Image (cartoon, rainbow, N blue to C red; front, side, top):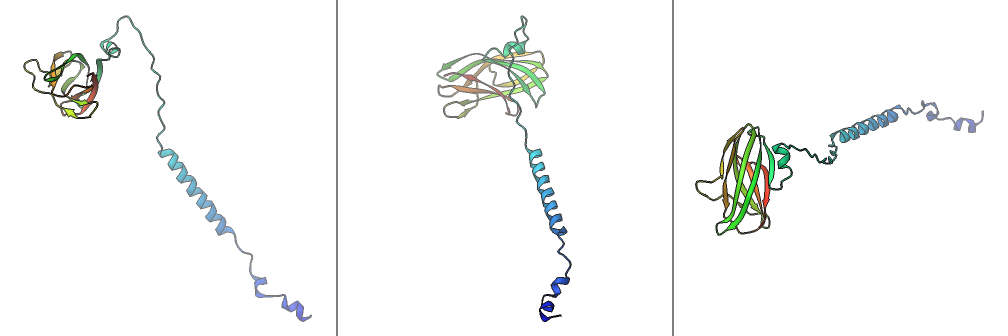
Length: 181
């Protein structure tokens, strides 16, 4: 044997081949973790509810709720706090030297409803509570199933389009109607 043949042999020639298993396992684990994270992200997203297409229903003898849905000054309501349903109507409004005077009614079709009112000026977003308006005041009260109350609510505010808000007895908004200025 010549010296050249011995020079080509080294200790590295006797090493076992490199094991690729740790790299492959690390790659697989990383892909699984990324896949699970992506799946969790997709599951946590709230799907957008499709917008329902309203279908008009015309019946010869409409219920009070159906009648309310066709009158812009009438709106059905549900109070979560009182677990009550009913219909609220603005029967008329006028502007006086005292401010906005509304004649309204509340009809309760289920449960007992404790109510109050407030309003917002549409131009300034200032809010107003009702002024005392005498014996026929409907500023706040309670209505039982099958009953209807009617009265006047006056808001001492400047003339202008106004969002009138029907609230439960604790002042939480239930629904709203607009009085033009």
